[in-house]
Length: 184
Ligand code: IMP
Ligand code: MG
Image: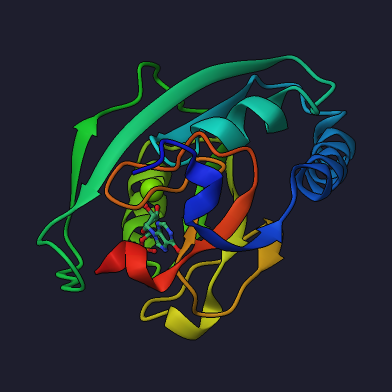
């Protein structure tokens, strides 16, 4: 048995270089959109999946931003989507009257983010926008508006760059698809 994670990957979907380029574009777009904002900008990362994307994205935003994080988990396991989301770690700050940019790894069914966006709006921020690295629209069961989207992807299970399979592969520097035998 090898410890080299690269050997478990069937194909690379987004290379390290590609991700770097796309994230720089997203950062530029966000910088442009918020350059005249007077209120504090809070970048809210959804742990753990978004953490790698978050650290690269915030460093490509050339404006002062504050960091905050949330941990949320969908109720039920596996493919079952109850629509209920449990908040395991809440925001640290009172974000009323502030600008929120929610940073997430992937929007799949949309259940988690649909719930969270309602939750954020109840905190009465000045504005709230969503930035997701990946979106799988073919899997959507509830509507989610993505203001900044890195890539639209087909219905394929992806790992790397924060995305896991059973908590593994989050630290791969690129995004790829696992070999089928890994799931067996
Ligand atoms: P949703 O509530 O169905 O949109 O779930 C989104 C969450 O499912 C993401 O934050 C990921 O944790 C997980 N997820 C969805 N698709 C993938 C994938 O292709 N690879 C890894 N995790 C995924
Ligand atoms: Mg996640």
